Image (cartoon, rainbow, N blue to C red):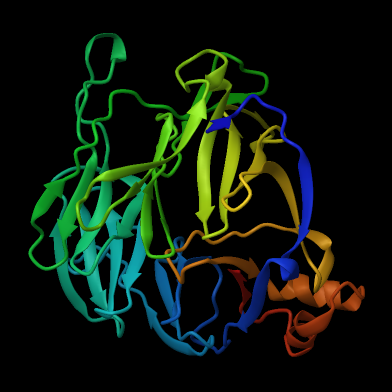
Length: 359
């Protein structure tokens, strides 16, 4: 149980004391000049995505460039945008949520295989590889009652990878929540952001709806919901609603959490968020604390992982940009194996993936 209004103690941890670290430089060549985000990392490979360019980059587990996929266009086998992408390494398939209602399926060499029709609008960012034969998606609300009240519905969809058959999980959504953004100089004008509702981590899938007081693990055999965390006070209370609780990552040792302030300010088109903070629940000791993680190979920088990927169990990942590593190297801030990796980089090289395997 996590009280989002409680003051938790601070704790500094060096990663090397609780984890093993590996650095994977992504190969750079003329075709595979990667600028974007890492969508998936596992023991089978690495998938990067450039949403603006509509490009997908496949690397093997050692970072060797394998293939570039770009099927952006208006044709029946092409996507208009990349709203979300995930991969099934066993089937050799990449899944692109290319419109609110369409999932495009490609082989690793870019060959088009099929289009799966969701028959409903999918919330952007909420499509994950769930099991050997199914994707999991989160549907947008379809009906609104009087005065904008939500009409209860079952939003979680299981989509068959072969035939497109659809099942629903028995999770009923009766309320919604979003991040509000107050624009400086125009307090009467607000914008809203949706948070991702699901998290894939270590082969498991978690329901992480900020509008719910409970965070669940989804059982792949029964499709049932197993509660793992309960927040207090309720998100629907005036005091509880000031912060949302988000699950950011899971290992055998830790739950990584974020207390996300529900109302943000925007100044000069820049969103300011200096009130949200991270929490860690230690599953071994029962401690809850505000963490500062540091990497002994780069001690001047606080560590925080940046890739939410359904990869290897107990692993979380961070992207390290080559130009930043070269700058840190010149300033004498790097040690150990990271220093060795940085010495072999050029500023324009593809990033380095930092794998943190918690013990």
